[in-house]
Amino acid sequence: MLQALIFDVDGTLADTETVHLEAFNHAFAEEGLDWHWSVELYTGLLGISGGKERMRHYWQQQNPDVTEVDAGAVTALIERLHEIKTARYEAAVNAGAVSLRPGVLALMDEARSQGLQLAIATTTSPVNIAALLRGAIGPDWRKQFLAVGDASTAPLKKPHPQVYQQVLGDMGLPARACVAFEDSENGLKAATAAGLLTVITPNSFTSHHDFQGALRVVPDLTHVSVPRLREWLAEAGIKAVASAR
Image (cartoon, rainbow, N blue to C red; front, side, top):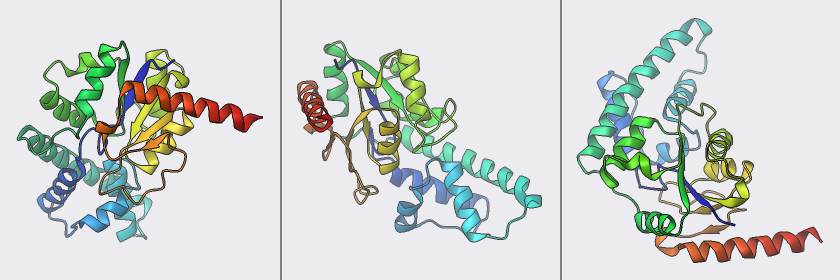
């Protein structure tokens, strides 16, 4: 029986990546770096989950001979860049630069009205989540979610399933009672590894990803309702039984 919906944040709840990209480039300029990530480059870097991890990966590409002696300085630089980037992103969101994707609030409202729980499972920071949902839902946004897993509570980033495992544990629900919502291949892998069936809503940064194994791939959440989710889950269960024979 369906009991909860679990949402990723960046790219799933809102098209945030363009704003994230601008914030990264702002941070690089503030620190006097000659880095500038184009949309094409950033699209590729999104294969690395987590902003700090993404910058470290890029640093290693640009400086393949970096030594352990330099590791502390690199870590400190990445921490400064991430702080600047996060502040820039939060300011942009607070200024109205980001809004929720179509159908998100309607599905959440419908789910709550039918007694379903809501949760968040993301690799982004708590600050980024709060900035987005405070504006979209209100100052009491946290009360809408039974559990919230993020970069501070689940350090192993997607495609590792840690954040989904944490959220399932916090809710006290089995994976079979939940559906996850993601926009990326790494997100799908993480949710699937945690035993969750997953609905994918791609965006311009992830439309080329491999979504094999998803419960459904739809343009946005206006194509999803609670009755439709129950139908899809029933169909998936029938297919699973048939394949086991």
